[in-house]
Length: 358
Image (cartoon, rainbow, N blue to C red; front, side):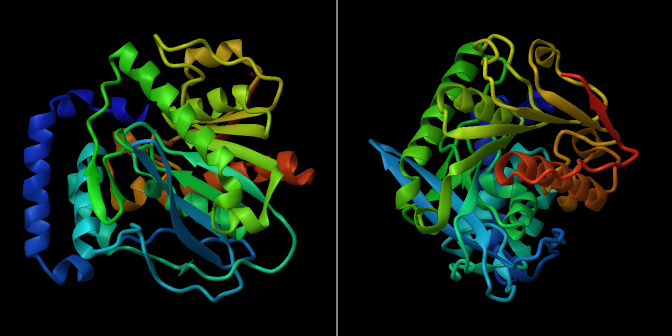
């Protein structure tokens, strides 16, 4: 669970709010240096296609959830801001809030200064329909913190729809205004159940509106869909698949099958992959038929972009950031190839990978 690391450091709303406001003020006063500050080098995608990203949002009642859509294009790689935002001020606020919640406040300038080798709003690559992957981030984590992984999947021919769960995400931009979230309380079982229920509703809203979204509506193959997520996003993927027959498979990046005090692990006859970071596997997986692989030397945030931004070893492990990212991408791509494309791709082999029985 992403939010559980160093949980005691961010349990009160007011201290976080004061620190966030102070951090944003400093960053805004920095002016142009915010743009030219130290950027991180998120690994470039290795697939055969250049990658593009476009933004969308869906509204149900008073709730709006922002989306990023990653997809293959024929446009040559450009240089797009790491954080999708309408302004420097919005990017600064979202970066400072996310970095604080992710226990790495010094990463905020790099998050805002980093650019990705992708295009924005470029035409989709020519060809037939493209398989679709829905991505749900960890609790208290923004959708863009896994940009490296998501653009890697897009470079291999997938359309990836990344969801921000408004309210529990550190900050989202809706209609040109930044909405700051409330810190999750992972020790509160009622909160965790409500959060899971809301996440499932968010995802089912996305599934019901895929035909209206850019790129997905015209080129997404809605008969070939998977869902993946990090930490509580992985449990979101499993729980959603249990009630959505359109999802063929789910992939969990270092998360539990079920959180303590939350509803029982869902029963599904479709394939599930757990990629656990480090040697430990949550006990909730013993009651499942999931395929399980561990990545030794990894930390909870390995596979996201946090190692690139310099997070501590208790969060990101000791494995080289580029190696961890490459192994994570290779495992997920091979699994998706077999279950969405019908290609019998061999699962990657690496001394750090350990496959286990479900």
